[in-house]
Length: 395
Image 1: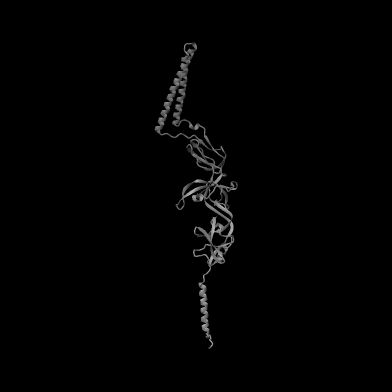
Image 2 (image 1 turned 135 degrees about the vertical axis):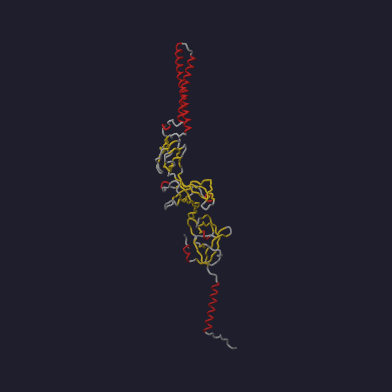
């Protein structure tokens, strides 16, 4: 039996054979599944705080509008916004106004009324003189016994009635003169307008001298130390806010936020149209400064942003919201285990824009994948991308 011998290959054949083997290895390597580059984060413990923010306006809690108690000519108010006033201090003065000018016919009618009233007064005075002479004559007769007491009583009563009629006719003359603008109303004393409270002048509503009607608003007075903030929140956000919740006031013009507390949430919502033309239901939330004495010099109607804390967990096991994916009705994450992505269901609680509180399913130190794509499946090989390694540590 002859021995089998391997055929001798030439150098060119060995070269082609080696190239074929390398090509086969390359194809096999390319066919193998490649690890998916992912971003990762560590599960750690820290603060989870949810806040809601909306625009607000400052206002003084009690603003008193000082109105004109009488109609007349208001003298120019010398006060300016910001001036301090004490309770009972005179803030304005109202003098009787000049009578209104009358047209020719009305003036003639007024003159006729004055003449008629004067004629009635003259007649009343004449009747009073006659009644006085009659009373004196009957009184002398009564002293001599020639007149009865009844006649004397009747004369006395007639004299009193005549004198009363004179007083009434004089009042008619004065009334007619006043109606004609000749009553001397400017002779009456001016009426001072006093401040009902101590505080500062907020606005001068009627500064220049002029005629004002009864009840016309003149000045607004309030105490800037008694400041509060009114913020309009969406009704669905207002349901999350509780009285006493901590808050901060931002965007008021300073670098530091101002600490505040929610005083109350008004129970009535109003409709407001947004800048985009959408009707929204808004609720007024009233906030008070935590330390008014050290607060900035804010005034009435200043704009700012009110940020309210609706829930807060100071030391919670937290998972980034970017790592959560939906699994049925619950949540899940892709946890990195030995270079592979493992889908793990988790139970989470309240959270903020960045984190959710972990109730069950994860431990501190676990690595989870951020922004898992729809193509990522349970068991896929993964590799943390070098550019994303900054996220692979607690924040």
